[in-house]
Image 1 (cartoon, rainbow, N blue to C red):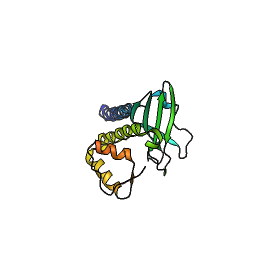
Image 2: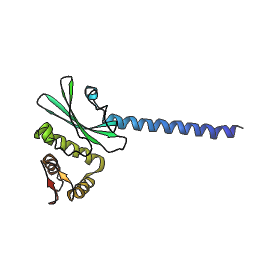
Image 3: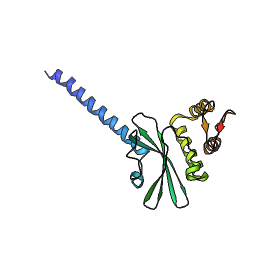
Image 4: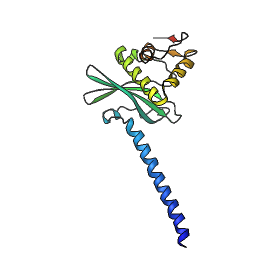
Length: 170
């Protein structure tokens, strides 16, 4: 009888340990892109499709405001750009790029902020996927995609080659 109990205890202990490890991994991942409390009230809540989570991509400061670039994810999984600014304790939703819309960040927050946010976005992509993967994505998008001036500027700052077929639009 004691021999049967040991495998059961081992199995239960293993499951508990695995759940603890997985929980701590999720906690660490959540902490790396923790969204500041000051901007939580500006996160979109009444959208179609509904937003199920948001991820902080980068932030920058200009004049008296801090700008946060987030990716808001509906259940479908494709991130939607969201820019929130904070001045003091007040947040403002500056930009929420509905799927299918094509709008340059420069037209919304100005060139300086747009460039810094674009640079932060691509630095984030390099950390996540690596420089070769980002270059591959740029090459693939160049044949049929549209790039904004702030994106081209940021990619050049990072040493990413811009194919000659890239169409830059305002």
